[in-house]
Length: 255
Length: 255
Image (cartoon, rainbow over all chains, first blue to last red; front, side):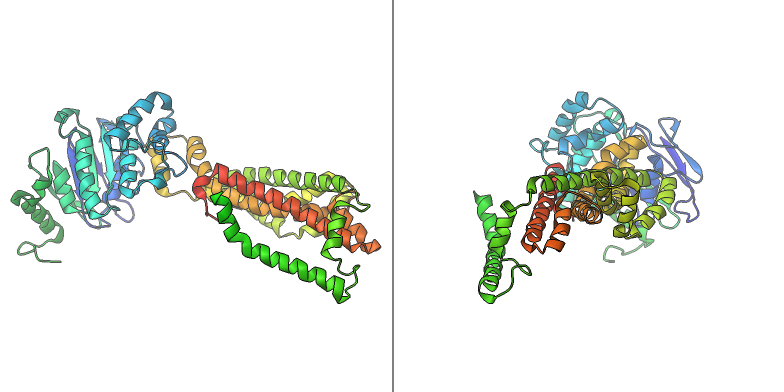
C-alpha cells in the first residue's frame, strides 16, 4: 500500500510519501493539527487529496472503497439501534445480506468481550465497551485495511491501556501469522500507545504536516503489560518525544 | 403499582390546587352573588357537559375529525417539505423563503378567504388547522435530518452507502425525536386552527357551539364546550407523547 498526499489552500499536509506493508501495524503520531487525521481520511477516500495519490492494494483511492474499515475517535454508534444492529450496519449500508452476517457479528462481539450486550442500546454501555462495539462494526466485512483515528483518545488512561491489549489480541497478534493480520494505520497523539501497538511509528510535524521520522519498533510480539516497564520501550518513547519536540538532550524532565 | 405511586407523588400538589380552585369558584358563585350568566358555577358547567339541549356528540365528533385531519395534513406535508429541504439545497433555496412568508401571515385573516373559496364545511377548517400547525414540522424535520454528526456521515460513506440509504438508515431515525417534538406543537396548533375555522364559518363543531352561546348568554354551555375542546386537544397531545415514547424511546427528554 502506498500513499502520497499533499497540499490544499491551508496546506494541511505537504510532501508525504509513505508506504505500509500488508499486515503491518503503523501508527501516525503528532501534535494536534499536524494533519494526521486528515491524512487518514484521504486514505479512506473521505476527503479528496488536492495533489498526489493514494493507492490501496495497487488500486488508486478516489472515493471510499470496500477494503477499508474505519474506527473514529467517538464510537458514533447509532443510539436507536442495539449493539448487534450497530455492528451489522455496514452490511446494510453496503447492500449486503445482514442476516447472513449475524453469526459473524455475534462472534466479533464475543471476541471483544461483549457477549450478553448484543441486544442492549449503546447508552447502556460504558465508553470503552462502546468503542469495542465500534471496532466490531469496522471488522464486520473483514476489510484487509483498518484505519483508526485516535480510537482510544476519549477513554480514561486505564481503559485505554486495556483497549490497546484488546486491540492487539483481536488483531491476531497471538494466533495469526503476520500475512494473515490486517494492515492497521493508527492515528494517536500518545507516544507510549503508538510504541506499544506498532511495528512502525511515523512521527509527523505540524503545519503543514510532514513526516519527521519513521521508526521501526522492534519490540517482541505478543506485547505484554510488562513491556511498558522495559528500557527498550522507554528509549523508543524518548526518541520519539525528542523528534517531536526537537530537543536532543535531557528532554525527559521537560513538561 | 409503583409507577402509580410515583405518579401520585408527583401530581398530588396539582390535584390539591385544582380541587381548591374549583371549590373556591363554586363558593364564589353560590355564596358570593356572582351571576351565572357571567360565571357559571362548576356544578352548572358539569351539568351542561352531559345534559342540556346541546347534542354534544355530533359537535365533538365534527371538531375531533377536523383536528385529526388538520394534524395528519400538517404532519404529512410538513415532513415531506422538511425532507425536500434537507435533500436538496436547490429545493431549500426555493421553498424556505416562501414557507417563512406563509408562516408569517396571520392565519385568522385568511379564514374568511377559505370561506369564499370553499364555503362551509369540515375541510376548510381542517386546512386552517394544518396551515397553523405545519411549519414547526417542516423546520424540525429539516433540522433533524441535517443535524447529524459529521463522523456519522463519514461512517456511512466509508461503507460506500448511497445517499438515499444514509437518509433512510441514519438521517431519518436521527430526525425522529425532532419530528415528534414538533408534532406536540402541531397537536395544539391543530386544535386552535379547527376552532378558528369554526368561528369564521361553520354549522357544527365545538367552536360553532361557543359562537351560538354569545347571543343566548348560555355561558355554562360555552364553558362546557371549552372543556370538551381541551379534552380532545389533550387526548391528541397524549397520543403524540405516547407515540414518541414508543417510537423513539432513546430520545426521551430531547425537547
